[in-house]
Amino acid sequence: MDTLASCEVDVKVGGDDSGEIATPWVSGMKKRKSELVLVALLLPALFSVWAAVAQAPSPADAIALEQQGKLPEAAQAWKAVTARNPNDAAAFASLGVVLSKQQKYPEAASAYRKALGLNPKLPGVELNLGLAEFKQGHFPAAAAALRAALASDPANNQARTLLGLSYYGQQKFPEAIKYLEPAATSDPANTELHRLLAQSCLWAKEYSCALEEFRQLLQQDPDSAAAHVLMGEALDGLGRTSEAITEFEAAAKISPTEPNVHFGLGYLHWKSQQYDDARQEFERELALDSNHAQALAYLGDIEWKTNHPDAALALFKRSTSVQQNLRIVYVDLGAIYMQQKNYKEAQAALLRAVALDSALPDAHYQLGRLYQAIGKPADAEKELHKVQELHKIAEDSLVGKISSSPPALNPSEAR
Image 1 (spheres, rainbow, N blue to C red):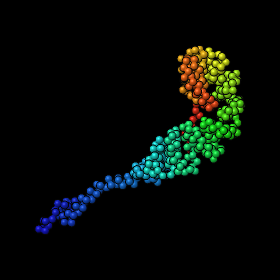
Image 2 (cartoon, rainbow, N blue to C red):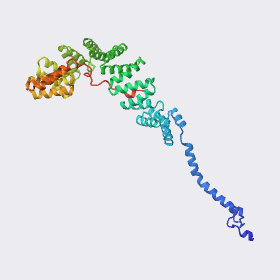
Image 3 (cartoon, rainbow, N blue to C red):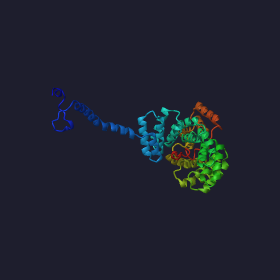
């Protein structure tokens, strides 16, 4: 009993009430049981951590979701991958692709930029970034990315085409031609691409290039009034005004109610000093659109040139109520006011004409005459000297008169 008395006695084996005294082995079991209880308590938390790790999507899961067409789920999977590994450039690039497929271009561009920040040499990302920026109409940002893409892969025709379109979107037409021309040559059936190249040539005043492109477009669609109009503009730019008139007449015959066709034809007659024919065409344009500012302005010029200043003033008033930046109006107003000896108004009108385009000599000539009339010989000599400098240098063609800018791009159509 003395030996047993030195042992723990407060634990009953099996938890029964038999009164059996515990041995030293039983006491050890108590300690181990306490440890097992602690492990049992921790198991749910440990299992949760393990389950979370086991269920976290992998790149393979994200790819599988994308292949199944589950794009929102794929995007979430890639976001989880990048959250676990924020230095995974390829994962950010893949996230950008999935976001682009959902047309979430701002988020896609951000993912592509993150990828490039981690790995600037990751293939294809600059092209994808350029396309995402282009789709948003961010043409300068698109051009920067596409230049890098083309530098990495000079044979990439998609990058070349998109870069040309990005320059077109910025109205940088000479730069657009450099990239659109080889792209169009490699894709002769792409009429839209050839049209954009032709427009770029026209607005860059590379009329021979424009003429060739429009000629090809007309061969494919001879009944296109728009193509005849553009062909006429190119011919006018080359100084072939009589041929330009023929093209506009063809356009007017195909589509007599097409906006600006009669104005363009009237302008070409006006340029050839065929004022009766010009008047008729301007009036036809005004019958279609009574607020056509340019038709009103050039009709007013005809009235002024045919010695009807009051009729001219009335037309100029109507024109400026619609549009206030037509240079011809202010040149003629200056001349009319000067004839009426209203020198203050004449000077204001002529200075406005110079501000609108200082490269054309007629306003400088009228200002020279005005300064002579009001006793400012030094100013008169300065203006008349400008006339000599600008003579035969300035160009006044139909391009830019029918519209202030070429047709806008539709970025959503780009691929």
